[in-house]
Length: 621
Image (cartoon, rainbow, N blue to C red):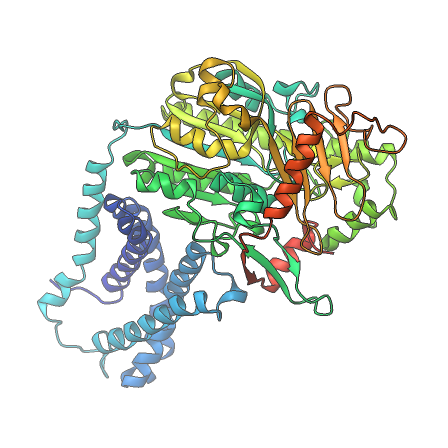
């Protein structure tokens, strides 16, 4: 059989590259105990490689025509082959760095340099080998190629077809799994009182409200921090910031050197929820968009597949739904989806811009350098920039419009899960890391003192088969409770040194057992310069806030839910203010401060691109 190199070999090479990429994707999963997943990406990546092979074919034909004379020599053939290989190697390099979360600025750092050097070395070897095997003759008359070369060019096709057939057999639709799937959806910066199911009058969240109707809604869920990094570290570990030590997402070690910015790293000594579930046979995967949650900063622990910097909610859903039809069909899984689309500055796209009364031209942002949004936030917090009631109304209208856009995307996701038969029998959680302020206490955005608009977050848990649908629980709960709750719901024993308590008894009994009364206190922390955190301690009646450089605060949340009347102020101070429960909360806050620093987090230097992102999100000025 006569096989022309210009047709068969480039296409075969594309298939081999696709197969290599598929195996690269699957090797981590195989090492984590999910060997069958080596096959799930073979067909899509082989198809992608085949298309790349076609481009390779066209490029190589053009290259050899332009270099016909030079290609009659060994060096000419090597140059022509290198040029022809440039496109598939570039594609492979892009996929490699995207999967590993390596940015261009990180290519020469240790974690980025090693895999890219391996790829370059492999490319050089491939170029040399193909230039030798495929070297054109000096004349147009060429001897007949050995028969084995013709058959060899078809070997990748046979291999990919065989693996694809095996994958199709192993991953039949509707295959029963012994345990339920767990899906955690986290909408960054979502305050609880913006949801219809929590009493908000605007139609911001019809899809989330439908999830609440199918599940259990916790009316008083409290975050562990008003800042993403600390809050998610607590959610992942079931422990408070003073226990895991993660406070800073962006910290200038030297005020004189603005380029020296570091971030805390979640310690490998912590046992994350993903690690426990993975060790019990759950396939763990995450799609995350938040610069504070990079995999290299410890948040990938326990995830077989952790994809950070994933972009918009639409892109996250595309990747998640594609994954569901692969690995998610074979094994019980725990998936974590973190959306940042609601994060300030809020700039909804039409028609959501004007849906709740926002100005179509986003006039609120006129004159504001959005690349340095943090500078504007700091001016608002310090009182240098005073926002009018009309401006705050516009800001909230943009927030609501953006929230409705997110909710519509969630509606599409829920519809997909129902079509695939996944919704009813999955354990689905929707929550947030913190809320946002709209001038209630003189600031907008978050990462400041632990007032209700920042610490009250939605928490909805939909059980398999929609058990307990429509149930509402008024007791205070905490995000640190989610870790042991999910483990108990899937039948896994939680470790003993957690700050969180399982909410399963509360769900089943409707009240907290006596032995769990200590779980009624919530601790909230936010770092500040000097290493001394602001600490809030909350129960269902009172909140005590302890500061380092100013007077402490005490609020009666039943009589004063907006926290406007500080019971410790000179004008309102009562001789009974610090007795009973308030006194106990003060002592608990001071105990937290004493324990702060027992666990010192490691820090990592941030690259320029991350620093720019954090400035645009308001974390650096």
